[in-house]
Image (tube, rainbow, N blue to C red; front, side):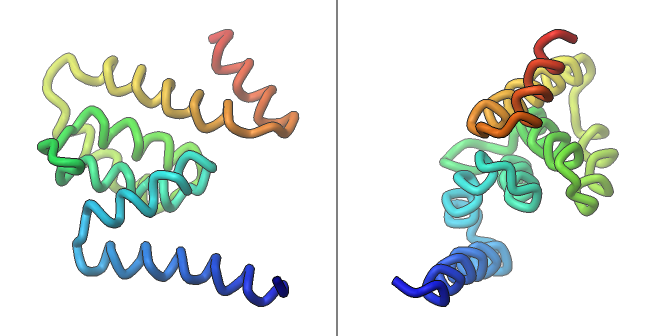
Length: 130
């Protein structure tokens, strides 16, 4: 396999994800974004959060799950997600913010736990010792 084919495959995944988002095909966008999100892709993490906001996998909208994923996207450097976070916070029911924060911690832990580099291990340990 040549190097150009690898780049094309990556472009194909990215384009398929963008097409699903533009067509508002939430299920497909979620299926494509979720594995990328677990690899730590900040844009994909934000898309997973947006999917939870509108409802995905036959489940209704979930503000806690949406806020958690968007929060992780923000901490991963997604600037668009940072603009959305205050609006999502307003959607949380009274008393739901601690649940959303705990869920965000779990998501961050899952993403960092999949990485093997030393910086990720250090960040994971620092989250655990808080």
